[in-house]
Length: 153
Ligand code: DQA
Image 1: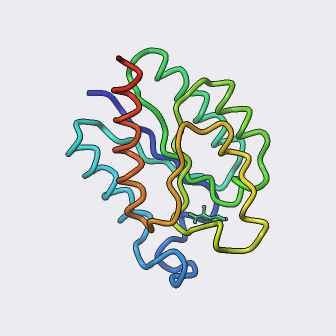
Image 2: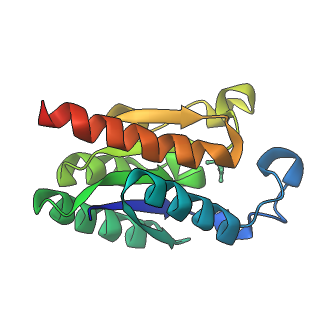
Image 3: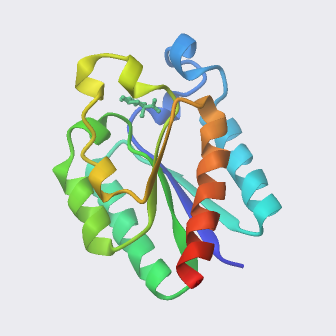
């Protein structure tokens, strides 16, 4: 069974209590269960990780590149939190690791403050899911499956 890596970046460990009017009341554990359930439905194992540290996220993207190259992983669902708007290093990591990444945001970042409208990840991402709440994680896993099937044909 192939794997999907679900990566959550800074402050997403606070889901459930962090600005619930924007991010909802589900906790990170609820989100990770949703991801594992969707993975099981679609025939994938789901590996969920969260870090508040940019370098750790970069190391995991590199690891995902190696796993994809070995045929054991189909790609990454990545909510990079605020690093989305600041991190050229994450952009370079995605390109350098040559890994399919679905950029995900729980909220509609384009309807929020102007500093959230810029994403360094989008130009390196294979697809983007924005504004569907935590259900977006399930959509992103389904999207990765579609991309993996497309790349076989
Ligand atoms: C977020 C949006 C980002 O702007 C913010 O910094 C986050 C969460 C989202 O899921 O909507 O931490 O990525």
